[in-house]
Image 1 (cartoon, rainbow, N blue to C red):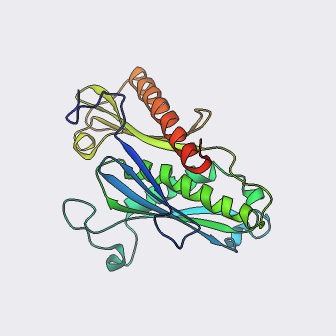
Image 2: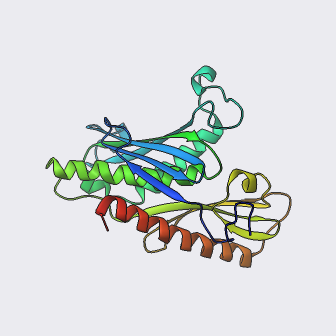
Length: 239
């Protein structure tokens, strides 16, 4: 048992609230336990210069944490005149993951921006951003279909992400901050609905880990991500 009574392979309670903000083309508040991330999708009828000739669309992401999302205040990035390296790395991961879920040719020459703002952080903010960001992306794409701007929803596969790790020599799924801060291994895994791997970010702290332990973390992630994709489908498809 963990400090919050969960089993090693068990996720925290996940709550999804769609249409949290009325203005974006897609909007989701996703909660993993005490972690809360607001994901908003914006459609722009333009693409970056490197996509001009391709006639394809583009999906990108931005990630930020509110000053009091954590136990101590963090200065807003605008005060530093540049994005911190952690935020830049996370938003690249979110963007790459979401692009793996969509046929950019079917999207057409437009850009969908997913803004992921962490309202409250208790571990797993990047994986919550990917999981919630996908729902906002799906909603934005469906709005294009409903408005007859494109013929079909360009989403090719549902995707989700979860954090896994090793704490006190035990493999755990969906680490909260208390677990993450003392983990011997911290790993973030992104998969699609076929359980194919889109991304793995993993590193050890102080000691190495075995391939068997890695395989166990992947198995735990696979189980959790299957559950998350069922929640996503219920939210956007009603089933």
